[in-house]
Image (cartoon, rainbow, N blue to C red):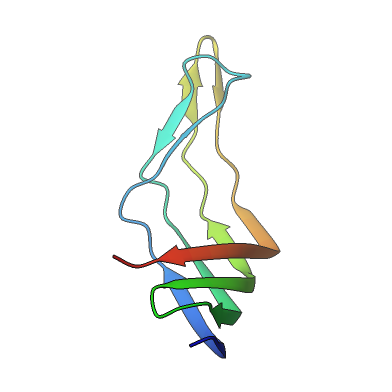
Length: 98
């Protein structure tokens, strides 16, 4: 039978591996950059059947990267800067269970 549902949750991402390239600086690559991301989400779902559902999810949070050391690129040096990004976004989810 069809049914509405609401849920909310928090997430915290601690990356085990990161790799960043910059197409404007050929040969520049930073890896192992420390950082984290956290988000809070709310989800409104509608179950059409026991195995098929549709959901609208709204998410907001912050992503932080520490930045890299200075890396040689040709005759110069470049670095990936420390970065804080706030985000708000949404997802439309369609679920089919088997």
